[in-house]
Amino acid sequence: MSKSIDNKNKIAIIGGGLTGLTAAYFLSQKGYSITVFEKSDKLGGLASTDEIANSQIEKTYHHIFQTDTKILKLIQKLKLAHLLRWENSSMAIYYKKRIFPFSSPIDLLKFKPLSPINRIRTGLVIFFLKIFKNWKKLSSVTAKEWLSKWNGKQAYKVIWEPLLKGKFHKYSNQISMAWLWARIHIRANTRNKTGNQELLGYLEGSFGVLIQELENQLSQNGVKIKLTSEIKSLTSKKCNKVILQSNNKTFKFDKCIATVPSVVFADLLNTNKYNYYINNLKDIDYLGAATLVFSSNQNIGDKYWYNINEISFPFLAFINHTNFIHKSFYDRKHIYYIGGYFPHDHEIFSKNESEIRQIWFTSLKKIFPQFDETQIHESKIYRFKFAQHIVNNSYKSKIPKYITPLDNVYLANFSQIYPEDRGMNFAVREGENIANIVAIDM
Ligand SMILES: Cc1cc2nc3c(=O)[nH]c(=O)nc-3n(C[C@H](O)[C@H](O)[C@H](O)COP(=O)(O)OP(=O)(O)OC[C@H]3O[C@@H](n4cnc5c(N)ncnc54)[C@H](O)[C@@H]3O)c2cc1C
Image (cartoon, rainbow, N blue to C red; front, side, top):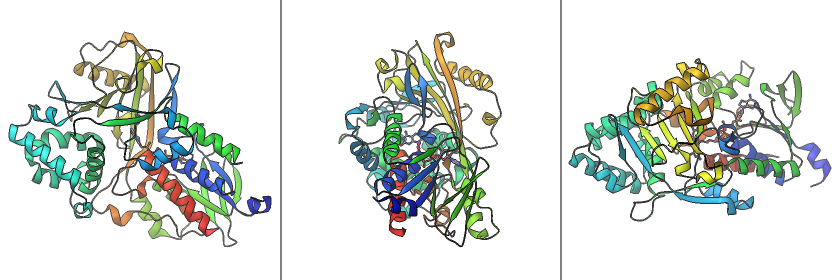
């Protein structure tokens, strides 16, 4: 690509998560001049990693499914396929002071908190959601209404309500059945034919390896990456220039792709114009997330994933990562996550780290009385403000378009993914889509 074309087509990308990095990768391959602005001091956003037990690990638990074709294709393209591992997953439910295995249809049939008839009914509901494809029919009904009706009151109370309440808190009764359908449909279809075993994917060395390789490719393609560069405002001028403000500096670009959450994007638009559009963006509610990652000498539990089906518990999931990826990758330490999603006004965002540790470890001890804090080597807490958007029955009408009302400004973020839940696979899909759209407009 000639230098004159580079100079003509300057594109800013706001946000160095997987959506922004994928967009930068595909556009820079076409020879455009790209600058990525990232608020934090590291790339990767919600999928970013940190060091624990001399290895990189995601700040929030991550795995992929065999149906995640877009990210699998990118892993292949970046020549990282040799690092991809498919491992058996295993799951359990903690309910009324007991742990119940919950990985297979047999486990469901033995799940004592439900009556035998409701165990069969739950199996049939999951099977129906696996084969049912016409999800649009589910978009105007809430998960609460649909599951209470078809799975019955007992299964709703024991299985679904704790999951919905634990994850969505005050929004739990609003969640669309179309959203839950997508979660179950995708997951049920990643199982083997008998439905007995689920395989989950992970990259040796963490998904940070993918982010690092994207960064390497971007550097080779001449992309400028500006870390600790929060964009504070964005204006689109009649002269076809997009003006960005960051760190008291002004930058001019021909085009701009924002990959930040919709509400963050709305706050960047310093204008009285487009009120309808901006209010629509602000109408998308988000939950934050918090996780505690720790390494320990102690092996706690024999499953990978524990759903906490107790509404009174302060977290949603306990994850024994080294029951998924072997501890030999982590200096032979066991690696764990405690975590969940929380509304912005939740105390988790105001408490200090030692208070969070105390509350969460006290509860973990109730599940695993043998849990011994003195065996812990390292522990770290992470908090993210925009981790999950609320997909309610009216959500479809709120989904913002890629092309915004501002000239030469585009938006690509996980609030546009529907009915599927956000995920790295869809971030890659959104990044590639927006790169194609912008390239056509150049
Ligand atoms: C607890 C949890 C568990 C998850 N588990 C999985 C999983 O198992 N599998 C899976 O596939 N996915 C999982 N995900 C989802 C996955 O991490 C996300 O879908 C994906 O990383 C989103 O990428 P993104 O680039 O769209 O958004 P983000 O990662 O949110 O990236 C946006 C970026 O914009 C930056 N930014 C924000 N404001 C500004 C500003 N003003 N200026 C400059 N930069 C700014 C942010 O710092 C961030 O880096 C999980 C997410 C969470 C929270």
